[in-house]
Length: 285
Image (cartoon, rainbow, N blue to C red; front, side, top):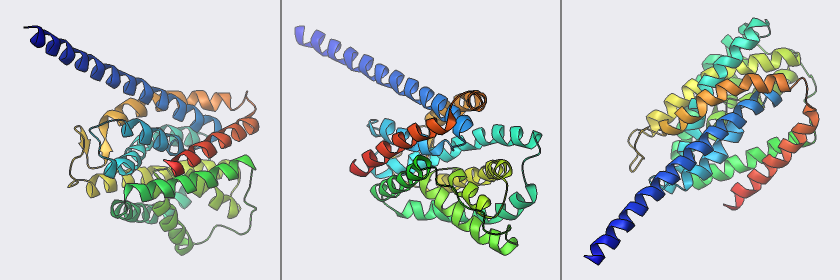
């Protein structure tokens, strides 16, 4: 009798502990959406560089998610959330007439092909390999932000072939690190003598085909993967998507407003330090 009561209490304790763990995960994901949205609007940094490492750590504590698929799920889910946030950004930039749609139309096909290719490559790589690749990438981004390294204008925007090659490279790298491509597309467009306002706006519009193709690619390549958690489609983990995407969409305009009142250059340096810490941590994980 006593043993049965103790077993019952232990069982109830496990349920309560599990519920608390789920609640903490939800709160963490909601806060992640807030931070990603504000930083996207404030610093012009795509949410992927924030979303991927935090998802890696949150989902890593979930016993239902095997370590072998951890980075794949973080990358795929990050790209899915960028579909939603990029739409808000595109709308805002388009209203101001800043999007260079001819460039977007020329880039889009190769961005899609490159992103799908990147998703296939990511599926073939081990989770640890993707983690190390992301860590190196994010450290390079932190160096560029921290030292405010700007690309000097060098030439005019290339033709359809040149943009196609650039799109393939940008799309492939974006898929491998789970981002919308802003950290790659903006420097490329600045190098092509595109004014900064148009470069940022055009990059935002280019992020949509990357996010859509990446979501489809990670969903398809992970469809037959074993031991994926419930509520996932391939490498897209929908509970995380639902928690992050709407909140990020709501807070992106706040970040844009803060950009006009806060010392953005100083904030970029603080963010660069944060990225450096994250990158080193992921290298050592």
